[in-house]
Structure formats: structure tokens, C-alpha cells
Amino acid sequence: MAIKSCGVSRDGKRVMTVEEFEEWLMKKFDADKDGRISQQELKQIIHLTGGHLATWKSKHAIRSMDSNANGFIDGDEITNLIDFAKTHLGLKIVSY
Image (cartoon, rainbow, N blue to C red; front, side):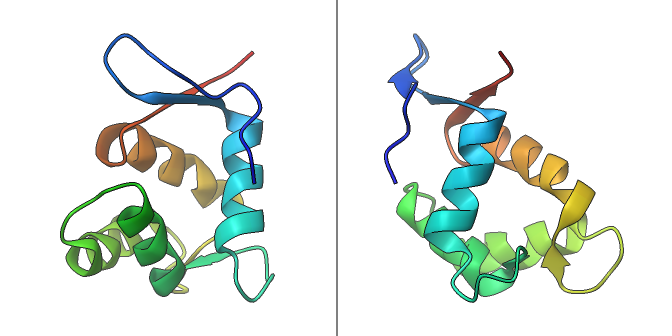
């Protein structure tokens, strides 16, 4: 999926809105279309965005973001994934 407002900020991060980020996640990485991001799907996101140690980061991220301990990032936990993406995936996610 193309990211409509994608640009690059002065610090070299890709820029997209929260809505575009969520749409990108679900269309590109939610392989089973269940509306949740699994550890395997998160590993693909990390790998695609150039992250190193994708397996370790995805395990750590799921543990830290999965507040209901169901093994997935879903619902309100997407906000946690946005924070993770800003910090670890080289993305700048903005609200318009």
C-alpha cells in the first residue's frame, strides 16, 4: 500500500499520519485479516523497515505492548505500537 502523505522529515524518518499507519499495518501485515498484529506479523514489519534483530525485537515488543496478555497487538494497544514505531522503526507518525 502506498502511503499518501509519506515524506521524509529532516531527521530522515518516513512520515505518515496515524490513520495511514494503521491502514498500512492492517493491509500489508495483518496476514490472517483478524484485525490484530501477531508476533510473526510484527517481525515482518521490523524486518521491512530495516530493523535489526527482528525476532528479538518482536518478542520484546509484544510483551511490552500487549497489555491484555493475549499474544497480539489489538484494539487500544495499537497506540503502543505507534509509540514503538516512532522509537524503533524510523517512522514519524503525526496527527492532522
